[in-house]
Picture (cartoon, rainbow, N blue to C red):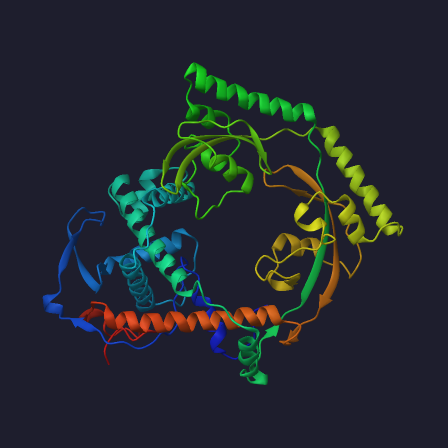
Length: 482
């Protein structure tokens, strides 16, 4: 349930902190700007119109080393639509203001020597193009027509520049707020300054626990997969076979098999893969292929192509052991027995979770789920994952669901029992009960204030020109000197 705050400043501000989302940043501090004389405005030529005739594309603004073209607003709208975002109620002036802010961040990211990996950006562009192609049934001509580009090369280069600028802006914002924290006293002061009648109202919240039983893969099947990966390794090293062709034909990772198993560059300073994967990857020498190893996703071999400072270019082949019908039936019978034992009073739900659950992340907390957004045990009912919400429908406190069928990351079947361990009805914010949520709101406000102060200072210090044709915009920030 959305917070009912009577236009509380902090709830508006908290929406501005997602670095890459195309959402509008709220009011920042005032600043003085030059206005480009329309008659002296530079013009550039644009051939993106389908008729092929040259179209004059005006310079809407200059921000440091960056130019914002009039057409950039149209491109932003196209990207938003392609990503399924709604722009209803969002004006072109607001989108233009967002572009100005992004360019300001990107300009100062370069000034502050923030380094962005071009290889990582190009890898991300590859993923974006593949996602966009799914919407045109793989038809590149249709995709280029939608984006009004003449060829794939120019389309990819434009996507590269957009994504690099966005990444620079994101990293600059992170740098501004990375050291900001709030003390318990600051949280208390933040809460107390909110008038009682304007305090947030939190929706109904549930605490949820679950028991997961997964069918066990036989040792014979595990060994079959390991032997298969060893054979791939031998064929590549001894027979000169291609790692990429093996990955393209046999890997079970849909995200990388189309590129021959190639993954986005791995950075030692910012590891993103699971620990088992990165431990193996970072132990290899250039040109080396690992022995087979296991993660929660299955079994892998890794090929380390190149080391570039902190970045590792890696490819992998993933194989997933198959689960037999007998193993599935055995797992179902086991969880049905667990349910009966809880119902009969032989175990509490928490005891059974600790004793039997296969989910390492929850079993030692008695199966209690942690909300990934708030890092506590409370799930606001109307913001809950739709699948989990459906499973909890009609379930009273401390009653146990029937055996539910679920699936793991690879789509393999697993079985689940779920229970509601506590229910907190809709209520006005309470300092003790809702401390973690209030703390996050206080932190958001402090971060926002820091960003506002930074923007105010940098706008004054940065060469910025806004074109005559855009000075009638009602900017949320004072990009014009008025």
